[in-house]
Image (cartoon, rainbow, N blue to C red):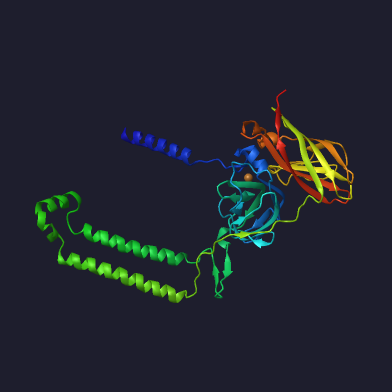
Length: 411
Ligand SMILES: [Cu+2]
């Protein structure tokens, strides 16, 4: 009888544990839950590419791209005074070997200018076999993570083969994967044993807790007699021994590593890229979106100051790309790449050199709904942003940031 009860209880406990521990794999990585206006009006990523999507442990992958800090930065979001170029992956499936922003090392945090464009390059080395959705990511102090486009990347092989070797300025080649580990474990065990020995010594010295408390009460002023001369001697040996080991190990470590430096931190300012607009200006005259619906419609006042006719080829916002296939062709890189290859159309045709005209643009795709930009209706600031890309007859691209109030249409 008792056994059946026990078995049932154990099964219930096991079930609860399983339910508590089970977590479904995340398919999207947080971006959809961020406010739509935030995603459209903070950091706009484009040209993001990975050098490979399938590689083995120890092989390298390079992620490159550009990002633009939206000129109409939301008031309630901290400005990128301290920002760090990161990569959004589930733990160190890769280790970052190097990162560059406009060719300058991105090891530390950086200050960026609103309204400016930068390009980045991150070199990663595969460490653990996994299939992951890798995102470009910018951490902005007090604003949080600004998530860039993601790509499915698969690492094969064996983690045991992974090495992360570097050569120090003292000429020694070390493997960062295991360097110093043995020493750290050794010293922690050593001090743990000393602490345990001290505790055990007193536990075996006779009554503890309540009996001892009673004895102290009973002996009253003579309670100190409970500590014998041997006890005092053991205490003294422990005290002096600790000082001796600390001092000796300090000098020993100094002798073994005579050249050490403090943790390198600090901040650099990186000059921005030249303006990508190339003499083309565009501003939003009015903009609407349908609720419910999947269409974003806006009128652009475009001036072409280049010497070649230009056509609108792409609008991108919140990592979604609406393409005008007559001008610029792009296909989704994988199943989770929101590229609407045929999503953009417009009335107005080419803008001639020196001409200013109005273009009526329609951006349609399910991504507007699935990536929850339609949730702009819940945002406290119904303004949108994005980048429009014009192409001239030679294929030269002009990238212009646009934005403004976005009015919902209900019927
Ligand atoms: Cu993702």
